[in-house]
Image 1 (cartoon, rainbow, N blue to C red):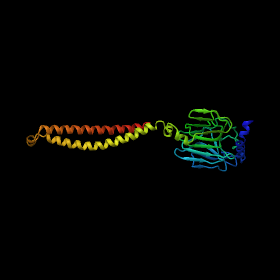
Image 2 (cartoon, one colour):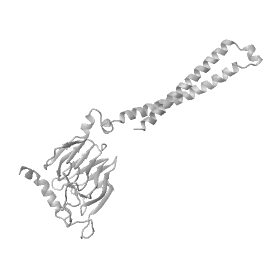
Image 3 (tube, rainbow, N blue to C red):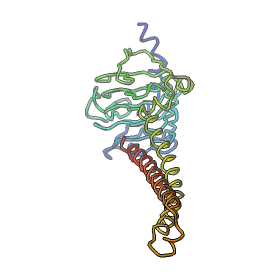
Amino acid sequence: MKQAILLLPFLAAFAACGQTAPVSHSGTDSVAFDTIAGDLPARLAPGNHPYFVAGDIYVPQGKTVEIAAGTVLCFKNFTGLHVQGTLVAKGIKNNPIVFTSEHDKEYHKQSAVDPAPYDWNGIYIHEDAIGTQLSYCAVMYSVDGINSLTKYFQLSPCIFLHNGRANLTVQGAQYQVTEEPFVYSLTLRDAAAASPPITELKDPLAPTRNTLRYSGAAMAAIGFFVAVVTGTQYASSQHAFSALSSTSPDNLAQGTSAAWEAARNKKNNDFADFITSCAVAGVGAVGICWSLKF
């Protein structure tokens, strides 16, 4: 009885939304679904009819998509919502946002099939979708309800009904969710204060990859510059050593063994510096290439 009282505002809102003309995506009725698939637009507003999700829909990475209050999305079997960017789905108490099966007779009264758990895949929040918000939303008749790879998102509140395998899974851990409105909240502020920092939470390999990439780039640049300088010096010292090594009568008469030894040592030192700088540049290049492997 207590659960029924707590659910009354949501159920009343759903019932109010359901008092529309019969809808169908088959084209046999007077009213049809608005069909969508693929990347969602920046704002999805409620139309005259529920949306029929004919294929997977996406919040693209790096983009923000807003779903307005009162929007109803009816999903075909084996389809789902993938949140790769940021989703802001803000219903209101008397006008929620509904994610449900294409067979939900509250919104498709002419369906010949009853809705059931596992009718559609569910909502998948990817690890980069930090900051996603769902308020006054209902997720019904899916496989996984909401399955999130990041813990930094908000539900305030949402209800989960008739989902098959799970209602809410966060980073592999299933939450015990009843039929009562459920609240979950870890915000961007929580993420900013987290240890390890948010960049590591989004991608655990990012620090290692960035260290290799930036230090490799620095080493490659410095090594290349020094190789140019030392290569020029080596060419000059090689020329001087060759001149002192000449067997011409003038060189034999004017040259000394000390000058020849000094020229040879300078040539060898310049060559060693050139090889070392080339090795530094090579190690930097290897670091950059390695950072691209993972």
